[in-house]
Image 1 (tube, rainbow, N blue to C red):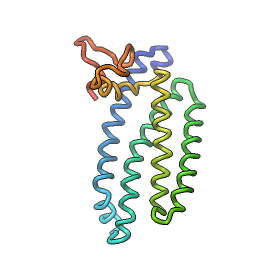
Image 2: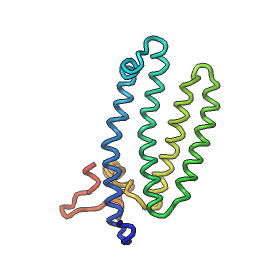
Image 3: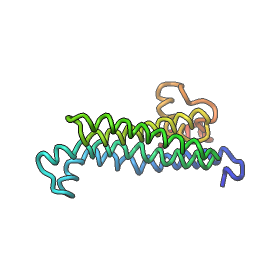
Length: 178
C-alpha cells in the first residue's frame, strides 16, 4: 500500500521488516538442517551406514540452499511489487540454467554422483540470491540494506550512506535491531 501511495520511505520500512522476519524464521531452520542432518535422516528414514553417509551431505547442502531460496522468494516479490516483473523471471531462468549445467557436470563425476544435484541446486539458488540482492542494492528499491548495514557499520562506512540506513529520533540505526 505504501507503493500505491508513492511513499518510498514507508515501503522501505516494510521491506526491511519483511527481510528481518524472514531471516529470524529461516536462519534457525537452515542451521538446524545443517547441524542436525544426520539425526534427522536417522529418525525419519532409519538410514544407517553407507546410506547415512551419502544422504547427510545432501541434506547439509539443501539446508544451505534454504537460506538462498527464501531470500530469492522475498527479493523477487519485492522487485515485482516495485513494478519490475521481468527481472525476477530472467533471474530465475538464468539460475535454472546454472543449476542444470552444474548438475550435468557434477552428477557425471562418480565420486560426487547424487551429491552433485544438491550442489547444483545450492549453486543455482545462490546465484539467483546474490544477483537479486545486488540488483536491489544497486537500484535501492528494497530494504536489503537493513540486513547489510550492521555489517557495513562494523567496517566503518561502506554501504551505509543516505537513505540506506534510517536514523531514528535517538540517532540509532534502525537496521541495528536485526
